[in-house]
Length: 307
Image 1 (cartoon, rainbow, N blue to C red):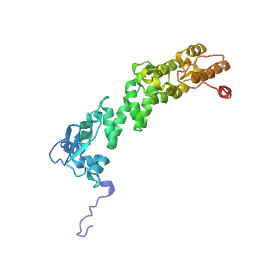
Image 2: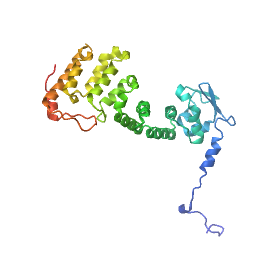
Image 3: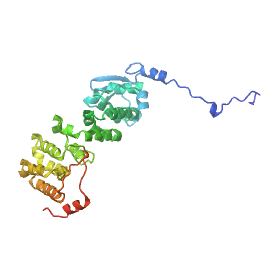
Image 4: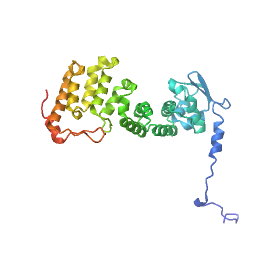
């Protein structure tokens, strides 16, 4: 009973219900996207102005919150805030900004990186997660081009689920990549990443050597031939080649050139030694790119000073 003699109507915890009107709330906020009414800040991106609202920006991004409300931030009190963005990000900034008002984003294969970079830069975690999930699904085999396009971004931004998926797709389709016109444009670190992988799937090791040879001797890399050879050639599994292939390789221009001669001769000597110690050459049934050295053979090979 309360003090007036009435019943005590204080609800118990089990009687409490939470009612939401999320759709109406989002609709009410979204109507202010790029609307001059009540706008208290203008974002300038490239040649485009966006009428914005500090509260909406700050509620979605701690970067914007610091930028717009911290006293020691130089642009906080200005009516216009200029944001320096790459052309790729400028092209999708409207989609990024609209997400802060509507909680939804229109995304395509070609716009995914730009939106992801903006979400990462301004620490909009929910959008970053949505982009990562979208890109992970769309980098599965056989979507090799997407995996190639997004691999470096996943690595740069430490997006582990996307990185693992891109890595797997590329490793499973490496023969196709080596035979493609884009092979010559690949970065050195990209090639190193996969040559040292135990997940690489290739038809034969000689094809790997041939692709590496073509990449190293590309006219744009002639001056870095020795440095690239030092990084790449030790990653080629020469002992997995058959003797006729090793002999063919031994008679190439690279094997006679001063930049690679000593290194190639050392690697080929190890391969011949392996073949001598393993005379029965049974083709590897599994296509997976794995080491075939036994411990005893490795010990025999590397205990010998090859000079």
